[in-house]
Image (cartoon, rainbow, N blue to C red; front, side, top):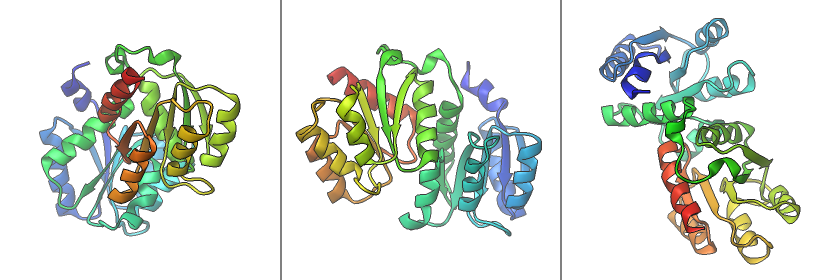
Length: 267
């Protein structure tokens, strides 16, 4: 399907208490071809609206009159009917610890305030990739037969990553909450790909990569790390330990496709 047609049909709920900011954001969305935008001024208002009629995407400011954007996405992910609605956060907050919960909840994009039009385009493109499920997303690789171990302590993050990978054509998943559980699963079950978070309790992603490469009977399995970790020293250590590819969290599905193609072709 033509991306312009997809954008025209995209239903967006914009949660922005400032009328001026809402007008600016709507202008950016209209410039991309998105015309179905409903503005709501609070978290309670958008939650009530979503329970009446689901949008395709929620774009929210971080600080709302009643709750934060973090609390909004957390509430959405906890409700079955709202859990898979795409979410983009707009925030002037830059501290990693303040944004970690949003990243872990499965967000399609985090935009700074103010943001550039190119940044919005990238976030919307990621949203379309998250929402769509068609043959255009597949590669020449036989992804349907892949057996994937998905490791993340956040159920919302696992669900988000799983949906993106399913849209690429992957169908067979086993999930683990942390590295220690993944090790136990790897002892008995063979996989074609491991997708893991970095920061996890019990046994983090770095320790999991090191275990697989040095102790597991599946030492050559490709490992894709999806992480919000920003420490270059830590990421360098993970690369040295033998990770096959690293993606940022939140990640762009298009980037995941390219890395998967590279990683699985090499395997």
